[in-house]
Length: 231
Image (cartoon, rainbow, N blue to C red):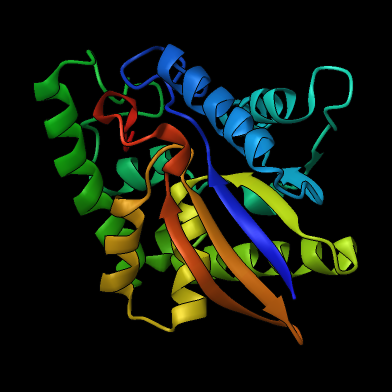
């Protein structure tokens, strides 16, 4: 049985002008994962990532620490592992004219800003996932979960029996788990909020079907609270 290892990207730059880059903590998280995998003799298999920089950079840093600079493979970029468009999801949930696509998601990275953002974001995602407003979105939740499942199945078929390491995001991981576990939308959202940066979720693949073997492991961070992050 092959495995699909879903690695969430390292901490991104919340509150910065460019969210889609790793923070210093995100860099450390990715490197620690690579060193931990090397020390444990983990099988590498095939490597893929989505297109966002935070996903690709997490893959690069992890694989360099895992395999060495010379032997580190270049992951294949697969758009099916991309995160959903969080900015569109937020914009559609806001009162008309109150924000635009150029409005910063968060002005600062203070605790208050994080709490305010999480409140807005959770409500916006619930609206999107609920399905009543599908026509307003470029990609509905149902279409997003289908895209994620298609990317996962294709990557495993292409690997021809080898394990696959996919560097992706929390939304993709939650979407795949909803399909595997056959849980309702509300529980899928609970999974989404639980996924930690650089956590590893392992899905087993046999006879064209996926099953959950491990969820949200951060053993590589050694239990250090200062290294744990959700955003």
